[in-house]
Image 1 (cartoon, one colour):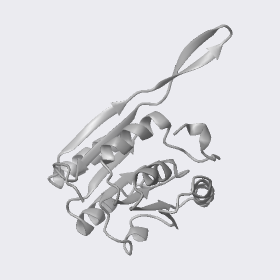
Image 2 (cartoon, helix red, strand yellow):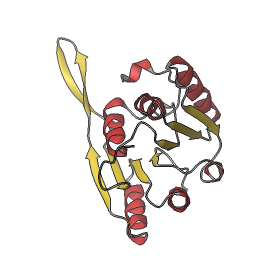
Image 3 (cartoon, one colour):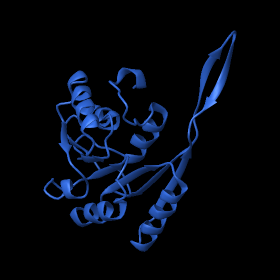
Image 4 (cartoon, one colour):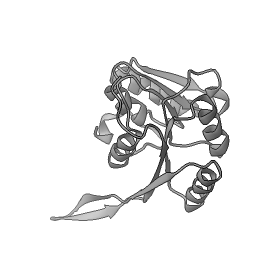
Length: 190
């Protein structure tokens, strides 16, 4: 989905090229239960929900402006499967049904307790996290090693063309590291 289709504000949004890779790495099924932690504008929640017609998305966000944007995007895209939760993780995740999939777009510095909680709820949960800072990448890789999880890391560097006079020049975006772990080893029909 194009970024410009989403209602935006001053809230970070996972851009479409990165979102496409992250959603592919989630390996969603039609009946998945997805937690989108640090949901921002809800772009991942909405696009994932379109693939999960029988599933449920819990968009968890602590920023009030972001919650309003998620609600507006939910309405715009008829995202009935999306439940918006205004709160912080991991506290807001405790009473939710066990996830089959988790996307970490932001954890407010609580990545470790969030990952430990979702693994307690479902030891075979599929987790995908997007990070920009190298320190965050090191933290999540150290955590996965300590938990005995095997993680795959993909670095996505996107450049977008911008018109400058009669020419188009490529403008680089920040590189994003997409870390994925857990989940089923093979596709199973449900």
